[in-house]
Amino acid sequence: MTKNQTQPEQNQPGVKEPEAKELSPAEALVEMKDILQRTQANFENYRKQTERRVEEMQQFILQNMMLKILPLVDNFTLSLKHTSSPEEFLQGMELIYAQLLALLESNGVKAMETEKQKFDPYFHEALIKVDSELPENTILEEFQRGFMIHGKVLRHAKVKISSGKKPVEENKENKTTEEKIKNNINGGK
Image (cartoon, rainbow, N blue to C red; front, top):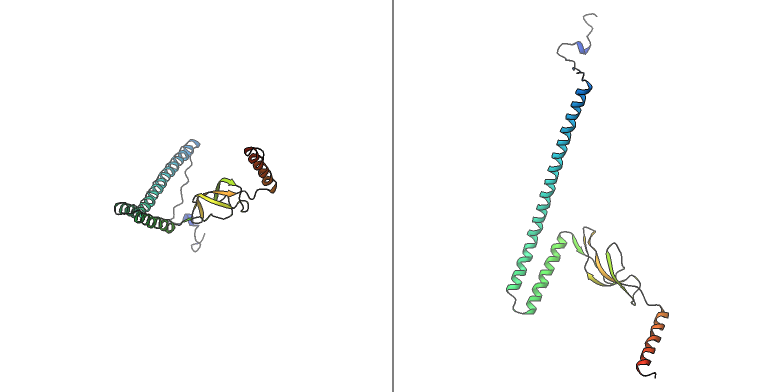
């Protein structure tokens, strides 16, 4: 090589070549086991830390909701202390009920409208099915109000639904049976 030609980088002064350490299979296994144990410990610490954060968030959310409910408790207390007539008591309960519904709505919870609606098993739970003049699967009565939260079902509405009109043949059979019973009661007249 001439003076003007540069030497390869590895031979330049100040640049150190990384040393490759040859490990025996037993040493490599011990090192891998050590890395695995540290990784497991790190993951376990991460999992515990995440669980603590979730628990803290749940407690914060619960605390926040309870702070919103406390004014309702105060209003119940005032209403129970200072009502002198049933009308005042009823008016106080209606105001508290409206306040409670407003609290629910401010947190994304809305009541379902069910009366005279079409039965939908995604939103409703049918407890009773009865004959009626309304079309089949029409909701006749609501036993327990259903609620949605942010567009998803929080609690299904418990309802009574229509099985539709009775078939005409059934009505005729029931009338003839009723007539026979009446005739027997009246002495066969």
